Image 1 (cartoon, rainbow, N blue to C red):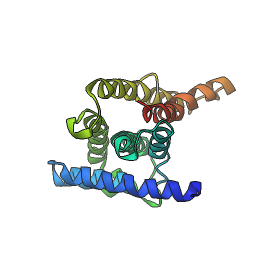
Image 2: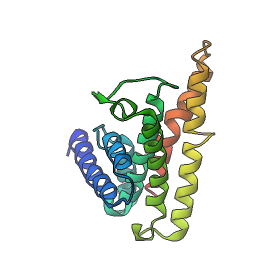
Image 3: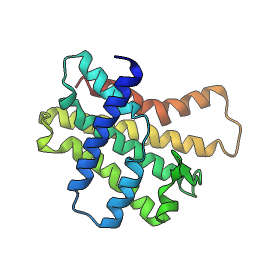
Image 4: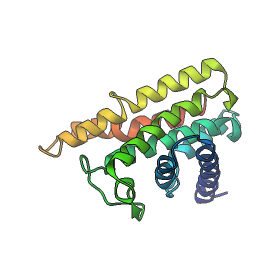
Length: 193
């Protein structure tokens, strides 16, 4: 198979899993609608692809890796929702569709992002995931580090700071490693866990 076909196939499988997970939520309808608007809006699903493919390299089945693939997409989407807000990048479109704060409102966008972040950890911690408890703990801790102050969120903070001054090449590399690279690293190693 080709890279593009594999990527497309895994994206469809991840979207099916995300659709199922969101359908199972017992939450306010507007909140779930905003979460769906964001997480099912398309995209390459490169991070979940890396989870599934790296798992396969070590004999871990796609089914076993799917909870982590879905979780990382929820977490990535939460970051996009917040990044699009007027307080940050103030984007009106994402993937050719109105951003969540435009389609709904800012408060709903913030809550949808927060809910997707929480859902990422819920997916990993779910006893039905088929993951051993020690693996769940390690994955949750690693995802928290990759997405937190020393990872994605810290990289976003640097990105915002660079709006008022010209960063050096080293600062740009650090920002990219934190904002984008941390989740990609997690995606590549989490499938092995």
